[in-house]
Image (tube, rainbow, N blue to C red; front, side):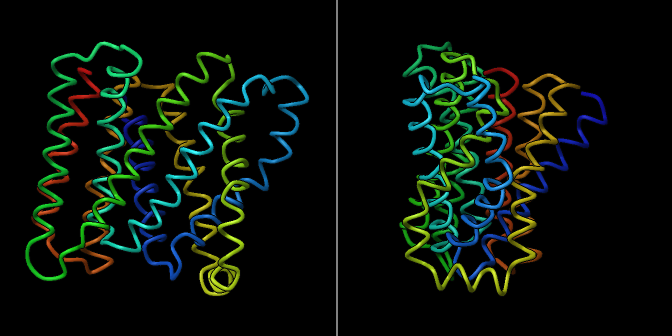
Length: 285
């Protein structure tokens, strides 16, 4: 893997872990994340309208739009809940690792894609790392309740769901990734609008006290993935995907060093197991 590609991917991983940490520090996690996605949706809306006018997005793909919008919307809500209920260094590794592990498993069960021995071993290692992280975190002081772990697992399920949906949708419709992602940014913001409007005071509070962080989060959600797209042009997809999951280790370090979260050694051990499993999935799955 070229050094330039590796630096791009590691930067993307750090950005992804960082904007999630900003969300964890917000007063109202859902309002914070929704505002960041709305900012991206607003500047991408003219492009989405243009894509429909040029046929780059078609009305025939509405079932796919609905499916991915629901999966992404569930991801945003459950992500905010996992950060509300539990530590960042617990929720992030579980949601990211499970999301990656369930993609090949879902592809095998639902789409009849072949799952290699290395890929199966990687899935098992990720699940083992998640179980260790969850069980280890249940020991000692400040242990999370089952709801925190369930919310993180639900987030991972949504990550896997939208990855599987997006892959099949673009194969079925021929829609390019950029119009697809832009449409999703707009649609999920609209679907979550009723829930956001129930939190008007929280929205105003986040804008008053955390505007810079919201803008940084908006940049991170789009800019971090843009770096990955450039890395894909320089290196094999498997290497890029595997390297990007270094964000799991970054999340544990950020949780310990910047957020003051405990159980560093236990969670780092679980995170390393998850990353090892992701490497196996990416390289041999």
